[in-house]
Each structure stands twice: as structure tokens, then as C-alpha cells.
Length: 204
Ligand code: 5GP
Image 1 (cartoon, rainbow, N blue to C red):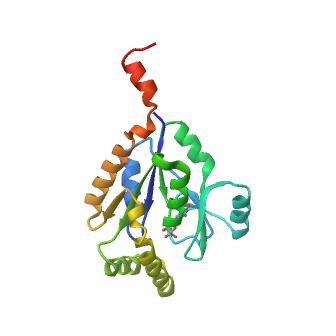
Image 2: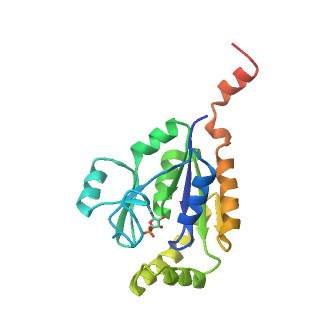
Image 3: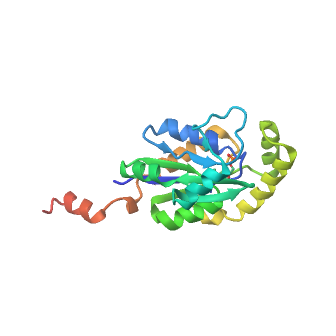
């Protein structure tokens, strides 16, 4: 069995980080891919936990060096997913969990095909997304407006995803996401079927 990738996308404020924590707790060998970003660190965030916070110059250098599986500009900041740790985790047969936007998902899907299972997570409606972003209290009104506008355009990409989760109730959505994550590990595309069938039939 090889490892596989679980890609989570959706508007910021839809609850991806909290849901991801549930998956990581439920699946002990799951590996969270820590992205690099040029966005300012928010209150309560720690370097190297949710992100590596780096400068524009450093991320541009890494892009040039081919360090990223994918990178994208989201809400005026750069975000990139480091390739090397993902390949290592996949080689170890682990479930790799990535939080990337819709542009990043497109690129990752082109590169990894069936090794990816993707889930789009959103709120029941735009009003509740605004309420969550306001309640979080980490962004100015300008930034919230930008994030809401971006959310509307991201929603047009839902059809490119394997699953859609409407996060109305965190516990219930987490339960479903864990089920998707567990099922994603059993995709036939992850197994060398020829080898499996021969060894199952005990053919030399
Ligand atoms: P936030 O700034 O709220 O943490 O994230 C903003 C957006 O960036 C979210 O839609 C999130 O999914 C996306 N994002 C986070 N890391 C990456 C990454 O490595 N690559 C891409 N393409 N998007 C990312």
C-alpha cells in the first residue's frame, strides 16, 4: 500500500483547521503538510504549526528552486506546499493532509491524479461565513470583504472535488470527514493490483 493525499479546500472561516485537527487525532499516522506563506502571523498562531511564515523574497527563491508541489497567490499573499516532506510521507505509506486553495488543488490533481481525494468544505451560506469571520476577530473589515469575494469565486470550483461538506455542525462534519479520510486509504488506485492478486492466489 502506498500513501495518499487528502486535500481540503474551502473559504477561510469554513472550519477547515478545526476539522483537520479531528482527522489528525483520529488517524495517528496522518501527516499534516505545513505550508509556507507570506501572510502575517495571526494572534494565537505559532511558527511551524499551521504555517511556516516566510518573506516574499524567500518564497520566491523557493518557487524558483522548484521546492513546491504547488504554490498560489491567495488574498494578496503567497502560499506554497513543500514537495519533499510530502513525498517522504507518501513513501512511508502515510495519509497526507493538505489545506490548499482551489488553484492549488487543480495543480496537485494534475500531478498526483487518483492518489488525491479532495473535499470542499463550506458554510451553509455566505451570511454564516461573514459571521464566523467577524467572530474570529483576526481580520479587518477590508480583509473580510476580500475573503468573502474570494469565497464566492472558489464556490464555482466545487464540481472539481470528490466530496462537498457543509459544515453546519462541527462534530457531525468531523465525523463524516474522518470517514472520508479512512475510506480514501482503501482506493484501488493505491494498490499494485497485479502483485496483490498474484500473492493472494499464491502464484510464484
Ligand atoms: P488563511 O490565510 O486563512 O490561513 O488561508 C487562506 C487560503 O489559503 C485558504 O483558502 C487556504 O486553503 C489556502 N492555503 C493555505 N495553504 C496553502 C498552500 O500551501 N497552497 C495553496 N494553494 N493554498 C493554500
